[in-house]
Length: 283
Ligand SMILES: [Zn+2]
Image (cartoon, rainbow, N blue to C red; front, side, top):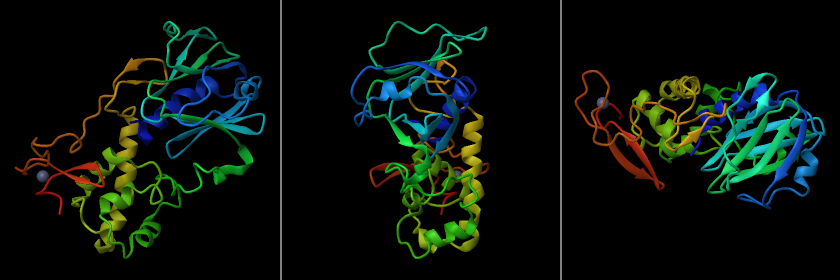
């Protein structure tokens, strides 16, 4: 499943292609993905100019000249493919019309943007840009990990008195936006924290240290072009897998990579999700 770094990678790939461009045609090939598309979606997109692309948690928001924003969520298997000729630059040929190409837009520069989603857990909606984060999908999301409001004071207050395991507390999207299972495992490994430690019992110094660690782990992954366990098509139209080496995630039974540590990575299940950790390094 695409996590925040993958979504940010897609946003960065789309930004130079879409920003400033007018959507010349829009085809919506089915009535829904995870939820129904908004009424007259193709009509509302056609002729709109893309003013810019933002990301909120794992949602991409394309702000349009019509006062609406196109919200895109990749879900489990959603991909965005860029194809077509663009101002002399050649993006690779689009493959033959694919069964799972659900929304296709062409832009004034000749680029074609395709939303392809085999499992259809993705979503698209059009929302009033002026509403900002009041959209039901966005309203309950916590602060952005790179935003000013995600800081030591905030996180301390958020975790105070909570008996819930730190793993679950950090996975909670109201604690911090967009942090998923893979990256929480990496953060806790780097922090030397056992995933089952009650969130409210952590010393102040440890909580303070989590803020930069979360930012570091996510920034590294964004830098690496995102990561995914699934076949993933990058926003520049390339087919490929993100090769990202995790220190804990998916490494059960393999040696811990901390110098001097002879333990092997263990796995426990918390709230139905696997937590990978080093039983020696993480306490
Ligand atoms: Zn270790």
